[in-house]
Amino acid sequence: MGDKNTTSGELNSETVQLHLIDIVRRQTDYNDTTIKKKLIEHNNNVIDLIREFMNPNKKSIQKNTLSPKTTNQKVFSEIRKLMDDASEAYRKKKELETQR
Image (cartoon, rainbow, N blue to C red; front, side):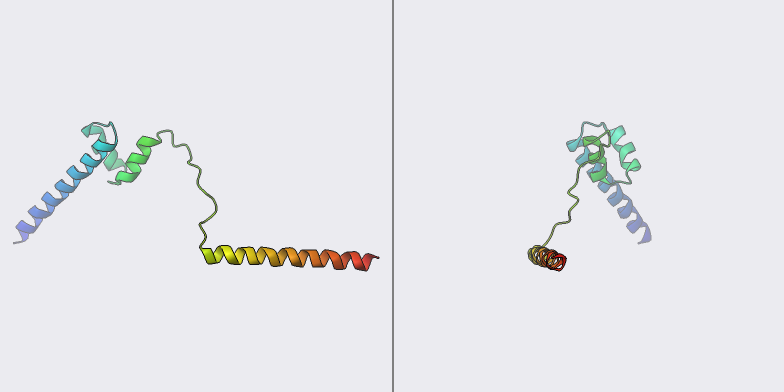
């Protein structure tokens, strides 16, 4: 029974490897030898392998530096900005009044 599980595990591993090779082959123009080397290099991470293929010079891809905000975060950010602006205007007004 133990041998049967080992054999099916090995077949499963080979099947997964063949499936990964097939995925990469469809997305790139690499041959099977190159695909196997690249899969080892990328620890079987197909996404990283394809990203490398698409961007071989590893140019940094510009990302949005602002994190996406929920609607509530946007609303409270606007309220905070409004309150800060009003506070700043009040402070400047008081400062001008004390100088006169």
